[in-house]
Image (cartoon, rainbow, N blue to C red; front, side, top):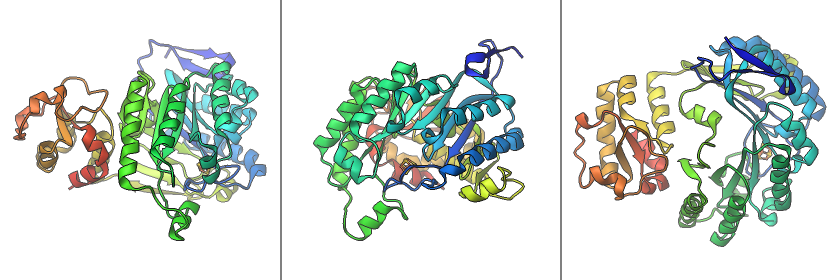
Length: 431
Ligand code: SF4
């Protein structure tokens, strides 16, 4: 198999004419944070920086022990998430990449993402990242309002977020994603508009925006239970989501998944892989893996992980569940309908049978008739959600009869109106 070695990046990259077809991804969970944000329920610890060396050694060992999990020696994406991966020193990341390169090659267009906190992305650190195989950085900016950043216990300022983007660009990393949060207690629509305008004025390629959630066990949840904060009302939240779609579209971003927007060609490959059945190996405490037939996840326990030297299988520091046909069907609906492309009905019938497709279409019918779901009749999936009653809906004007002969090459998609109530619609499509 033809490949070249790129010494400067210390990875092996397949040449463009490779016949590689199967997509596989690697996820590495870095469970360290310098402080905890009040809304976060991801697994991470603020203690244990001194354990970083042992953690890196354990991950390298887990790579070696579990490399066979993936049935390909080529990775189309690597995602280093957390926690806060940018608390790792460049040398530590280099060790991880060197071990990855011992076992896998990166496809020529591999997306290699590192999650970073804005205050970590100094000019020197950005340069060090650019010297590694990293070609994409995802930053949790959340808001450009310093008061709200303090409320959320974020450790950066709005100015640091802007500087971080500059530093990454100057270092040569030009594929930058930022995360925003809306629906922060007391946040007004004008403040959210300002966040969006400031985010979209930056030279970033990708934007993820999430409504603030009150996860059980978080400080934010506790504050709400005590009556010290309250959620923004639903109408305002919908207004904020609507504004998000409007501003992103005007800025040239494609709305390719419910919470994700990208400039053309910059859709997140790794995360899109999760939605399209990509096999992936997750390393580190709390990391999840999927091989097409089962899902398994490491225990969220850094101490035990280090103690086992990364031998999660030997130490039984994992759980596993086989994916039943029913789970597969529900996950297919859940993940595909969240995307602008939607659900390919022909593929659905191939995977689950005509009877399941008939049942799905029967459950979808009321939503098609009220304009929150639509069946698109085209060869390629749409890039943005179709407008209710718009041109793209023209072949389905009036009551849709649900003729099964119509479904070949067709896609079931949420309309813009459907996006606002997507959770309800998708769950009601389950058996
Ligand atoms: S949001 Fe990110 S930085 Fe904040 S506690 Fe969670 S993982 Fe750590």
